[in-house]
Image (cartoon, rainbow, N blue to C red):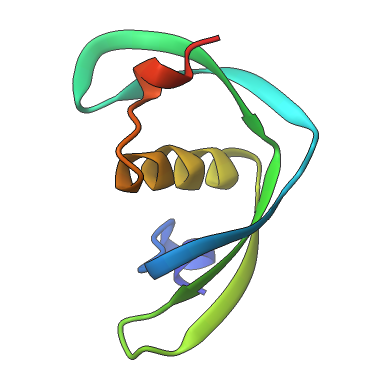
Length: 87
C-alpha cells in the first residue's frame, strides 16, 4: 500500500521469486555516481517476497519503473553497482 500511496516500500530480506523474460532498456543514474548515466537493460516485471518492519511476509509484483528501481537497489544489496550492468 505504501508503494502505491507514497512510492515507498519498506522491505526487509527481499527475495526475487520471478523476473519477466521481457527486458526494457532505459538510462539509469545512481547517487553513488552522480554524474554518470548508463543505459541498462532490466526485466519489465519482477515478483518479490519480503518482510515488513513487523516481520510479516508479503509478496508483490512490481512493474515498469517500480520494478527497475527495486532491481537497481537489490543489486546494491548484492554488491553490484549499475556500472557492472552496462550493456
